[in-house]
Length: 217
Image (tube, rainbow, N blue to C red; front, side, top):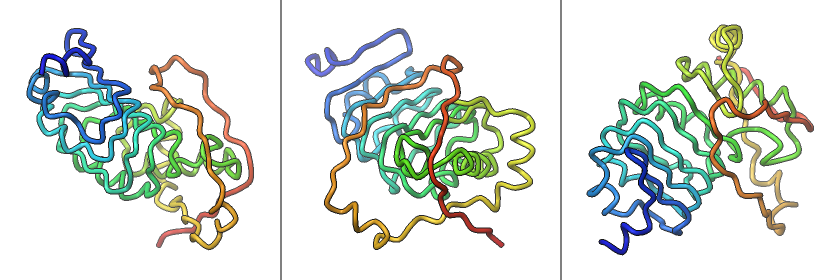
């Protein structure tokens, strides 16, 4: 265990275990730091599951950028978690993710999903524009009305009000696999994505062609 602990960066209640290619959260992390950790950074690994978080009962900030987390993502209930960044993972089902977060992270105020297909912007595909991204924001804020910051932008009072009025109708229709046959043989090489410091970056622009949306009854 001593050898494993040498891979951990510890600063008070802040724990970092970055770039070790682990596919699940090592047990020793929870056993050693779970009871007192307030901030946990697991970026640049190969995580497909966050089941090991069950021992981090006091967690307030979680950074899991640049991993392999998909639509089967399950978090334990984290009542104190106010910051969650899931940038650059494999998330595509935005509605299921938001409903899960609403259930297990009641104190969440800061969320970032950039670099996932679930977040329509040019980081993932050039066929997205600012209208697509704004619809996505309305839908996220409709599902998680307590958010104060989404991706790189602060949530304004007006945006929050509009989200409650219009967000229910902003769900994205995911294209069928047949529509992407021309991409089957191509490999994408996305740039590495690193955690976003809160409030320290300018809003990003999202330009391109339009996505497809439909109205929910």
